[in-house]
Image 1: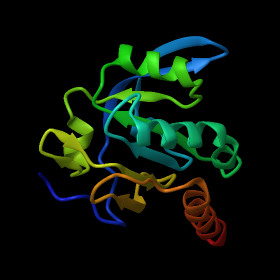
Image 2 (image 1 turned 180 degrees about the vertical axis):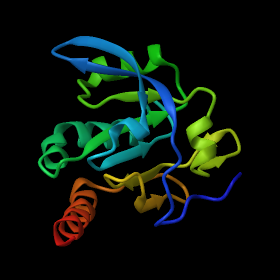
Image 3 (image 1 turned 90 degrees about the horizontal axis):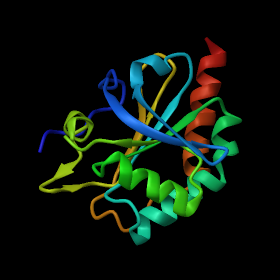
Image 4 (image 1 turned 90 degrees about the vertical axis):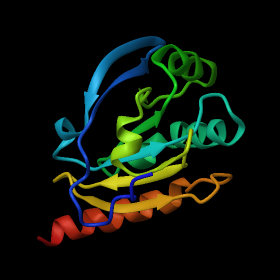
Length: 164
């Protein structure tokens, strides 16, 4: 396993296939992190679609998506399942953020969050310039960072940006 990225380092760029439900229609396209410059991005890595804690985490982020977008942030869910699995998961629970398929585990490796065959539940906040500003990498992944924790970090990030 490679070492998890450190705060203040450039966020590793990647391009992954994604599915995003929009008014009930599944829109599939590749998403590239560097194309999101200009606003913060929350990268929520999770071990698997349709599992207990992952479902709670992604449903929470989806139902509270406005808390992120009100702070100018985009949220991406990323796991190693394929795009078909992601679409089924998104439809089953009405998930409103893009789900990215990291089947080859390129992003998992770049962020240093692989644990053998598993993916550590991790959240990274990347600023508008593509720099890693906050992270949480779970030891066991039985819990997840909640919306207030993440939006507090985004608010701090936004306050730094307005001071410049």
